[in-house]
Length: 311
Image (cartoon, rainbow, N blue to C red; front, side, top):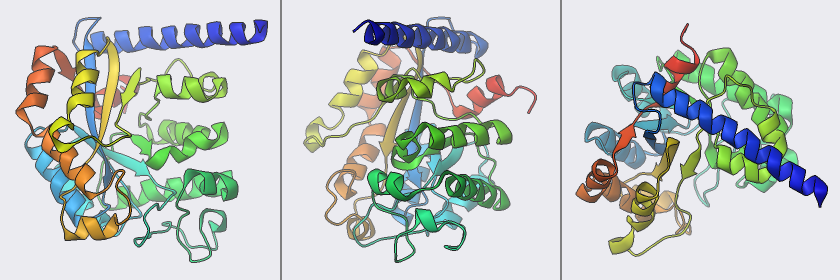
């Protein structure tokens, strides 16, 4: 019991330290020390044409201000061209090691001979975090993650940050350390969800340095709501938002034949889900909530300029 109490106190101390760091971040970005900073981030760019088109619309209409690309996906070249030609948009790399759909699959950038532990018998990524963790070898994870970053760079993308599809790297501190190391090497901030990793293992907190900038509160929905109530969880998060760095993750796509075929048998994060997310970020309710609660929108590019000013 005493050990558990000490652990809780240690975690609280660490998170308080990170919170203070993010408050300093607000000041460095030109805001009040107690400003509520928010990144509105779309995952899964490159997954499909319908995804890319919806994300581009959301960027252009101001519904989102950040996103990250799945380099191994078939529609990567389309979104890579957009990112190259529109460097003002905040676009990072969504490092990918899983392929979760029933009838739509993708594997790694590297050949199967180099990353055999990441691929199933058909040469595709495993569908779940559990299967990934059971088979993945850290050295192969590092090689594939690096290959994805290099592929993005070769297409003319100037990524602003690194994050991870389905949270696979949170399966082990060893995997997460790989992402942190690559972020440092490429001078890119890495998504570090402080509230989430503190609940998984203290090892994740222990591996962070004072130079890491953390997201104090990460929010995404995990349960569908009726269309007319879809935005309520997001609006509640905004209304309850605390000072510090926050991120809302959304998943966008048009609900059409392409998306429905890819996401068949997947109502969670499926075709209708992604259309509802798109409709919400483009809604007046969303814009009004941000204004009413004095939310300050920031990007990973801005965070990178603070974390790596010499870049």
